[in-house]
Length: 347
Image (cartoon, rainbow, N blue to C red):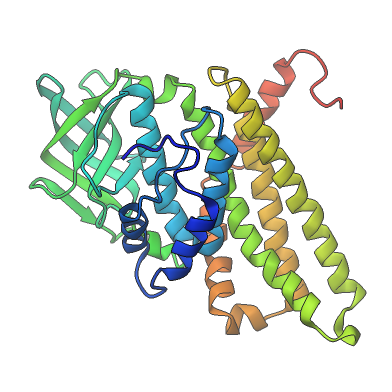
C-alpha cells in the first residue's frame, strides 16, 4: 500500500470505520484495523491534497487522541520513507511508529554491517505504541555523532525490549509511549544521514500535528455546543453563550489557518514551512487550551465526572499539547517573523 491517492481514504468511509471500532480495544488494535481496511492511504503532504490529509487526522483525533497519536506516527513514517527513499516497499498490514525524540541521557547508536544493514544499540525514549506496532522508523547516530540517520527496524526480533515503566501519565495513557532498548538489533538505513531534518517534509509533517490538537478541541467544544443547544431556554445563560462565542472565535481562527497553511504547502512543496508550521501549531495549542478551559467553566464538573468520552479527552488533550515546545516555539517564530520581508500581517 502507498499513502498517495487523494481519494483512497474518503472522510465518510473513515468516519464509518471509526464508529465500528471496539471502544474497549486499544489504539494499536484500532490502527491495525484501519490499516487492514486500507484507511491509512492518506494523501502525502505537499502533493495537492494536504488539507484532506489533515482532515483525516482531525477526524481520528476527535474520535480518540491516543489513536490519533498512533495514526499520525504511522502516516508520518510512511510519508518520510516516501520522501527520502521513494519506491521503498513495506510489509502488507504493517503498522509503523515514527520515533525521532532525543531524550537527555539516552541515545540510539548504529554500526554499519553491510550495504544498508546496521546493528542498533542504546535507548530510544517517547516511542508511542512501541510494544504493539510491527515496525519503527527512528533516528540513530553513528560513532561520530554528526547527523541523525533514519533507520527502519522490525520490532519482533531479538535485541529489542520495550518498557513502559517510565510512563506515568494518566492522560494519553493508552498511547503506551514506552522506551525501547536495543542490543545488537538489526535495522536498515533509510536515506542519507541528516535527511530527516533537512527535507521539506519535516516542517510539513510538524504542521499536521496541529490538526490532531484541533480535533481534540472539537470533541470538547461539541460537548459544550450540544449541552447549550439541548438545554431548556431558561438554562441558556449569557455566561454559557459567551463561553460558546469565545470557543467559536478560537476554533474558526485555527480552522482558517489550517486551511491556509495546507494550501500554501501544496503551492510551495519545496519551500521552508517552518514559520507556517510554528504558527499553526501555536494557534491550535492556544485555541485547544481555551476550549478546555471554557468548556469546563461553562459545564462544571458534570462532564468530567459522568461523561466518559469527555473525561478522557480532557485528560488526554493537555498531555498531547505538550508536544508543543511552548515559549521555545514562540521565540523561534518571533525570530523568523523579525527576519521576514514585506508586510506579513496585511490583508
